[in-house]
Image (cartoon, rainbow, N blue to C red; front, side):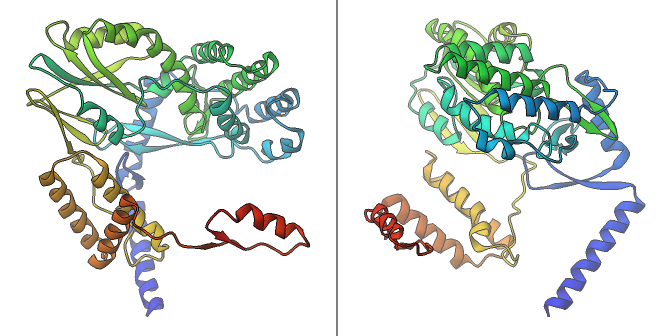
Length: 439
């Protein structure tokens, strides 16, 4: 039976490949959704070339991979406070290659532009970047005064804010944030922040050496041509998000506090490149706020969205402004699909249920009303049916998550295997005695 099904599926795959080849088309992922896009290869190439041209990314004469590899080898021998000698062999990528540019399609945006996707796993600096990303979170902690971690955090905050008839809402989207951040600005902001820490002078010096090298190694290859952006952080790098936060949070710490003290802006929070603002329309307006933010830093330009019918969308939420309070509803983009891993897939059950666990957790934690919760439950059940899940499987997950939330689920005893090694195993067992793990 399985062999027959496999043959049918393989036949379908082969037929699709033949159709794509005949029509000079390819399949790419849609950005921020589980959909796929079938697009003509020439059309995709035009979109990528437009992205490169719009961002003024110059072509290099040859790939600098070998040169960058030597920089990494030299740097790790200098930075002994950051990188232990025993870790050197794990930091150096023995077979480095130039990062390749691919693209996702932003189906939710006008003109369907691309979101560049670059695989940096084989880049010379990748292992070093992973290590430094962990180190910086400890050695250079950020204040995160004006940031939120997720939609639930901002929802819990804004429903408690008292508003009046003068209150209005806007959202701002920082345009191509990672591409436009200035290299010098990031390094300067990092140096200033490091000087405020308790790290030693030598430690901070070594961090700056490594950051300078990592910032320089921002390059990629497309269609056999090598490109090196003049500014920005390396797309696809594990450290890019933190470097962006170092730079943007320095700007926010300098400016946002004054805006809030003036009472023109009532509330300001940012998630990566999306900003939500509540303001007093008797003291300012959306144009003045947008202009003020755009003038603050020439590298960070924003696109503004205003509320419609007292509603605005932000981080998968519809934020409703009433007379004296704010209410929250869930929001799904028109391009969003209800596709999850099919129940009949060979994936482990934990992986298949992860999407439903996420939606159920979101449903139970967001401060939405009973009617909205019922709508979301119906959507969730419909999603499960469309992906061939038995309803009792979803119901069991609901009950399990409810027990976890209320603290009524029994803690199961966990067994941890160890290879027996003389008296050492006894010492290990004492470490686990106050836990639920047994030996």
